[in-house]
Amino acid sequence: METDYIQATIEKLSASPYLTRKNLELVIGSNRRTLDYRIRSMLNRNILIKLKQGFYVSKKYLEKETDTESYLEYIGCILKEPSYVSLGYALAKYNLIPESIFDITYVTTKKTDTYITPLKSFIYKSISEKLFIGFQAINYKEKKVYFAYPYKAIFDLFYYADFPNEESIKRYITSSRINWENIDKLNRIELKNLLESSNINKMSLLLQILNKEKIL
Image 1: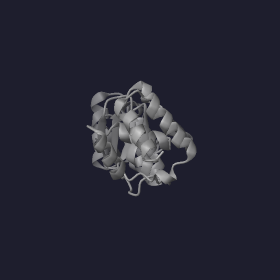
Image 2: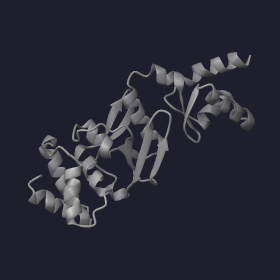
Image 3: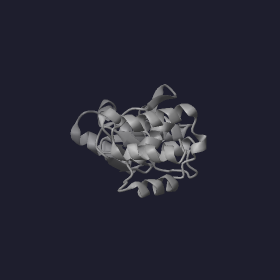
Image 4: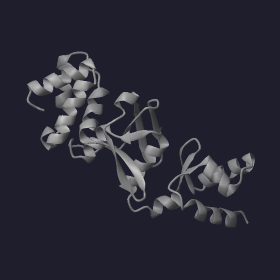
C-alpha cells in the first residue's frame, strides 16, 4: 500500500521543475507529521532531491530533462530571488575566459549565500539595488533564466575583487584572463558607462587603467 502511494506520488511530482513544501502539501496533505514523514521517506528513497530547506526537485523530472545546464541555471534563479547568472560562470558561457566554471554564480539583492547541493553548487553575491542591472531574460522552455550581459558580468567580477592599490588592479586584470578581444563594441561602451557612473573609487580607477592600457 505504501509503495503504491509513493509510486502515484512520484508521477504527480515529476510534472514540476521544482517543489516547495507548499507544493508538497497539495499532493501529500497538510498534516505536519504526515508531510514530514512522507518527505523524509522520499528523500531516503532518492525520489526527491533537497536543494535547501523546503525546496526540492524530483529525480524523475531531472531524468527527463534534456537541457540540464539551462535547467540548473533556472533553478538557481528560483532558489534565491531576485538573482541573475553572472561573474565567472557567465564569462565562461560567453567564452570570455578560457576555463570552465562548474559552480553557478549569481548576483542578488539578498544576502550573500552558497547552496551546496547534490546537483550543483549555487553561489550568490549580494549587490545594491542600484547596481542590480545589466541582465536579460533568456527563454528556457516556457520559463526565464536571468543572465548578465557580458559587460555586467565583467563589471561584477571586478566589483567583488579586493583592490588595495593600483598595482593590485593591474595584477587582477592579468590574472582574470578575460579575452578582451571577444567583447563587442556595444558591451565595451556599456562597461565604460557603468564604470564611470558607478561612483565607486576602485571602479573609476579600473576604468582609467583599462583606457590607459588601451584595453577598452
